[in-house]
Image (tube, rainbow, N blue to C red):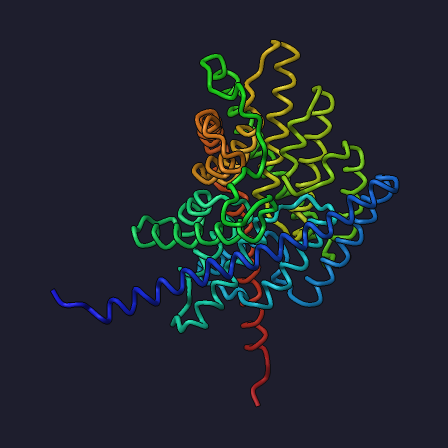
Length: 447
């Protein structure tokens, strides 16, 4: 059998494209992480030398003002989570996707998150990854609308920001493409693993020679006594039931707030500073260990000492996230949903200790994954992201029990996810604008 040169050339171009996407996304996510660390570091320094009740609201106000000005004045497509924009692009909508979007998203989101707005870095990293992948595909001569490179680039962005290659692959297949194809599996896995490898090489702050550094977990979860016991199942199933019931209510609350903000009709440069100010005031009520967004507040939740404190943390996290997401702050929803669910798991853990003098140590990560899974209906993404944050294999079973229970309950109450509603809203707005343009054209007198 002779060598098929045309097929070999296509394979080489595909290999080059996937590697270029992985490296490009890793560089973009690394810059994004450096920006967040620099701004949050300034916020932490100021809060240690000045009253937190003054620093946090002022930083939130300033971050919201700058991020809102970038969105309103430079690139409106950089607002919101970034996931909705990628989903619309993959469905054929005329959504801007390129270097301009990536740069404005990187700047606006990094400032917003570093300044204290409770949105996640994964949405922007997904949109940045998609934009980098689109431009990379175009530079390498990809013809037509690069849907597959955009999907792969967005999954690589998610994987790189969480250092979770399996979660990135699962996200591509569950949320973006919804298809099972061995070539898609292979390309998605290669790009996400490449992005994570390069991000770890750039971001790892460990000591010793670069080539000999170990892959450490993002969250240093206590591994002792984390195994699943039969006694743990009622607690995990109860947590799954509670998160499954609360997720549709939380989704409805965010949708209601989005409609209220929509009727208010304030541009981002006016709305986001007010959101940042209010959230900063609320977060000043929490312990100072919640000021650092680097570990998604999950490490801070591990230090909860009693149920009243856990209740306060849950209330502030849930309300702040709902307001920020509804206001289209430039950040993701996956990480905040994970934190809200983890706060709920921490509260249940404290209440169980108070009532029964026993609670599974896995409730924090299981609650985060369950709430995320119930809101997005992506079980593999929720399970793998939570597991890969801790790199603790013993958490897989308890997380899985909780996630699947939560999704089953939530699906009985609400079939559509928040992303489905956001995409539908965006499509309705686009249809209304097209109809208005067509009516305006037909109403113009002919010359």
